[in-house]
Image 1 (tube, rainbow, N blue to C red):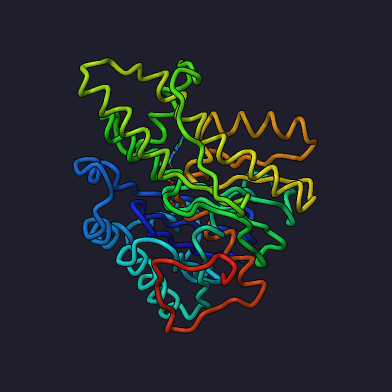
Image 2 (image 1 turned 120 degrees about the horizontal axis):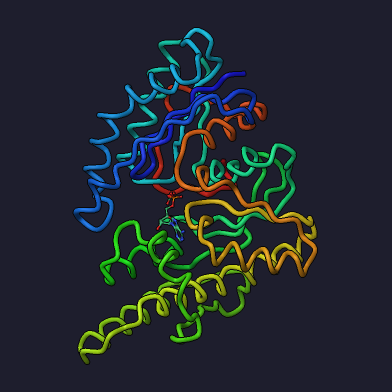
Length: 336
Ligand code: KG4
């Protein structure tokens, strides 16, 4: 089954053709990062307009690269939630038009479910159940992936997402947008014990997290140093920050994995590219005996191949939508 998949939830327009869920025939991504860098963050209205400009050409490119004609497609899958509402709407409307014109089923895909499915692309033998740590610019959640389409959030952030925390702190340091990658690279050479930064806890909800305190403490540290004319050691700060984020995430995902007892842990989303988090998870899983799945870096950030993969499993479960499909800025992953 050949699926044309569309993704436009944030600042990447993406189109892909995926066969039977696991074979990526093409994976095209048009990033808008250069445009948003000027503003130090994603400007929603600009994102929507750029998606409109890119999406038709990108879908054509995905078909050409896959060597597949429109007539050979079997379905169209699209991210319909969560994301910037105007941005998601562009993809949803394009997918509706394509599916209607080609007389194909329209498959709605939850963006975070797509991120989780990135693991199936990297590991052909991986099957649920497993526990998945989903960490991106907008999401930080520990998900019980019971089957390809039955999922439950076991814990998550009560405030900021881990990626948003990386981005805000990096912006104040002036080291670029999006800031997760540069912070990660900077921190590799640093001393992670140099600065003491808080790891948030939520009383009575052991699998929940909080990153707003880490963000505030980091910004205060940076501003205090600036006011006193002191030089912050950037590699040491980035390493200490990376340790605080990892110390929030890794023990909790390990606790969730113990609770579920599946013996399999996966990671998903842009922050899953972080070298500190990857190394800490590897060490924790080596100690616990859990098998760890880390998606290839090209599938960690937003892309449409992951949407085509998850779309296949949604279709198999009968999740096909009508022409009244709407876009949502937020939506529970359990609802699909
Ligand atoms: O999954 P993604 O591409 O988009 C969303 O769905 O949000 O994630 C983007 C986020 C950004 O916050 C970016 O700073 C972060 O992923 N990120 C990283 C790294 N690479 C990207 N965060 C930490 N370390 C990295 N190496």
